[in-house]
Length: 127
Image 1 (tube, rainbow, N blue to C red):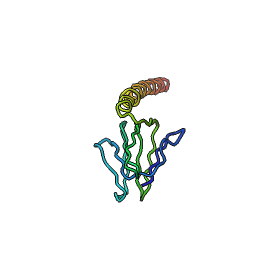
Image 2 (cartoon, helix red, strand yellow):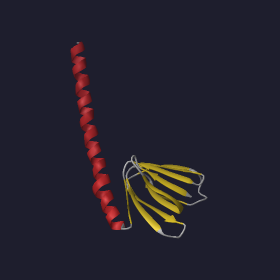
Image 3 (cartoon, rainbow, N blue to C red):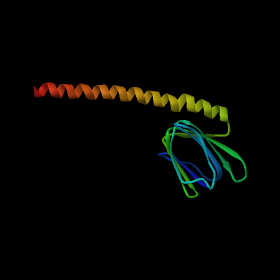
Image 4 (tube, rainbow, N blue to C red):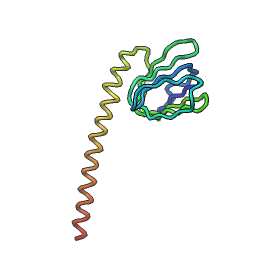
C-alpha cells in the first residue's frame, strides 16, 4: 500500500507500507493491502505502519481522516509527529493533542455563549 500522511504545511510520511494500524472513535483497526476500501475519523493517538522491510514506524497524530482506496492510504490531520521512541510519542499525544482538544472545547463553549449574548441583545433591540 502507498501511505501518505498529510499535515496542513507538510507531508509527514510518504512511504510504501505493508500494514497500517490506527485508532478511530470506536477502537483500533488494522489495514492490510487487500483490505476493502475504508474511511475512518481518527482520534488523537499513535499510528503504526510497517514498511516492506518489516520495520515498524510510529507517528503521533491528532484528529483526522483516513481514506483507503485501492492501494492508496491517505491520512489528513492537523498535527503529527514522527519518532522512533514510542514512549515520547505517547507523551506527545497526551500533552499536546488531547490538551488542544480540551482547549478547543473550552473556546467553542465561550464562543457559543458570546453568540447567544449577541443574539439576545439583537432581539431586545427589535422590541
